[in-house]
Amino acid sequence: MIKTDVVILGGGVIGLTIALKMLNTGREIILLDPEEPGTGTSYGNAGTIAEYAVLPVGSPEIIKKLPSLLFNKNSPISVKRTEILSLAPWLIRFLYQSMPKQAAKNAQAITDLLANSRLRWEELADQINGKSLLNRNGNIYLYKTDSSYESGLKDINNRKKYGLNAEMLNPSELNKLEPNLNFSEGGASYFPDGAYMSDPGKMTKLLLDASVKKGCQVIKKEANRIDRTSEGVKVTLADKSEIITKHLVIAAGAYSKKFAKQAGDYIPLDAERGYHVEYDMKDPLLNRPCCSAENGFYMSPMTGRLRVVGTVELGGLSPEISRHRVSHLEKGALSFFPDLGKPSREWLGFRPSIPDSKPVISQSSKGNDIIYAFGHGHIGLTLAPVTAEIVESIITKSKPPLPISEFSVQRF
Image (cartoon, rainbow, N blue to C red; front, side, top):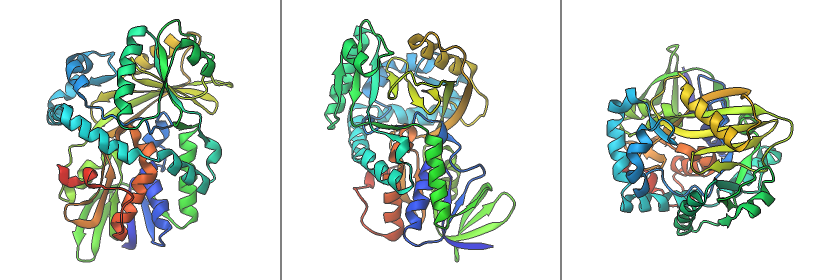
């Protein structure tokens, strides 16, 4: 049996950043993940540091569009029809959180959590020698028609209530930033404070290397069960071996729900199935990530490739790839760049989704021997550094970097 100070369940960007943060406090750390750390959803995302992502997924506008969004196979948000009954409790909570009062409250909490995300990442990237991977030239939402542009203007004005810095661009202004996009109408919104990574997988590898160098022990085994004992929290692995720890951090993303339940907390977490396709190319077609506002996917320039990523498919943790969702991304990319051809590769990952779009960053209901750090939805990469700061404050019983009651497990 192994004994340690902190065990972190989950080797994604959240778990890796927490590991590095806690190593700086002098504690012994074990990181548990059955796969190679940093190769899951933290690798396959759009790479954006998105301080502008202040609005929750659930909103009054979503309620109006919900039937078409959920049952239109080409919608940016869809539900696997075989999973509708099992998703019903989650969807009911989601509808409630989409009401005006709840949505506004959630947006303010997300805004507070997102503050200074770019600065935090700049400091972290500098610490792990990853500054060359971090680009600081902003991000863009694209509107291909005048009607879409008008809807986008309303959306951006709503975000500006929360202090967002954004500029609306007409087609000629957009073309100056992105010469390969030639719009005849519509335009874009530009977020100059946004940033992105040219290779999220490489950044997480740098996090892993920095943590291991500082003494983090990585165990590539699956955890089956957690139990509180008189000695500490016992983690039982799939091979029946055991680890006893003073503090257990559950940062297993979409796989966190069962461990929280074992710790005594029910959390309405479900999985969003996220896809990407990539096109290998020497020279990037874009200068920054550009999101198609109508279709809900990003086109992100990355080292040696263009990654087309996004849409939301609620439908559990099945590894089966939806050919329709992949085709939807391909068609979307071709609508901007008709000469792309077939993608070089495709990918499926799982985002942890909570009805109010707020992560759970909190001690468990029974104490700070077990800490939750999951449910970040589409902004886990963005929020990794501040999440690590909050977890450190919970373990060390120090003042957190911001009020954290909105992210408590007690809200359920």
